[in-house]
Image (spheres, rainbow, N blue to C red):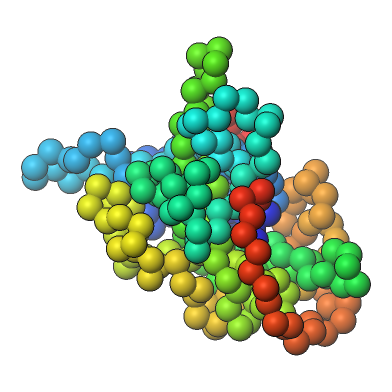
Length: 254
């Protein structure tokens, strides 16, 4: 799964990486958690004028935790921070967004915890090998509350873990490569079945997993020190055979 991540790149760099118009300035964020605002990139509402050099993508904030448009009371729903890539196109909570509102979620990496004896154990900072910025596959919905208030919400898609991550967790975020940004965001032309290849796990050498201290466990810890490497508590075990269980239960930047 993906329940905590980080974004430390500058807005100017994001503008260039994702070809969007000016992004409002924001500080580095080292410990982004569910229900907080997250930055997403999606297709613009309409096509650019012929001959225009304006980007056809926009960046905006959503609450991390998708609320389907049909929900009557969000309090009756689990916090939908992740959507399983294998079933999102068919699940009531996600199928409309999967067809019409796909997004990119810029990240500098994510955090994962290895289970040890039934308890949460060693924490890892999982980042692109050598650093850099990655785009997770995301979904977004605009929810209109009964009182007339409106809020944009989102979720991160996950897929089965690749060989490098499987010893830590059996799920990982979907990675959308730059060459696939256009296909992924083009919801007018590309139905979910036509972008299914993007949902496959990224190659094993894409990420590196760095053992870090338990500081990251507390949402209140938001400094760069939470990413400092430490000696792991114990070697990661060999991944066990996995049984996939279907489960949907799963504004300012500062």
